[in-house]
Image 1 (cartoon, helix red, strand yellow):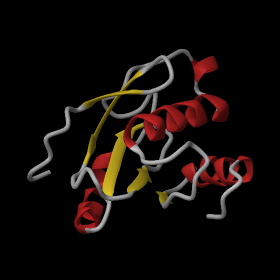
Image 2 (cartoon, rainbow, N blue to C red):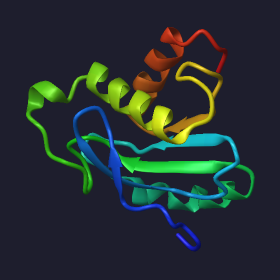
Image 3 (cartoon, rainbow, N blue to C red):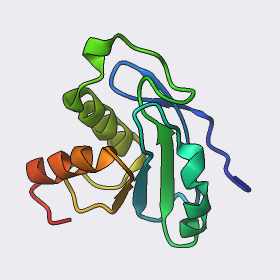
Length: 123
């Protein structure tokens, strides 16, 4: 991604994730979750144009793409939500649970739906 100074190493909840955060740093965060299981974020890089108005977070979820492989018992919805919380806390503005835009593809939609149910802010 042109002009992306962020490293490809991101920290989830107790796991190393591969991804990138598109600039500008002062813009609101927009989280992109790839499909799967087993996919990676590269199929969604066409969305990098959103970085004109948002800081776009692309990442490979735990056990997928170039992210760390974990035991099957660490691939549950709660594990993915913990990673999402850690990434938002590290790269977003405002608290976890604040209104935030997402795009989820394929089976990641249930993760987004679960996240929105536990968030007090509207989607």
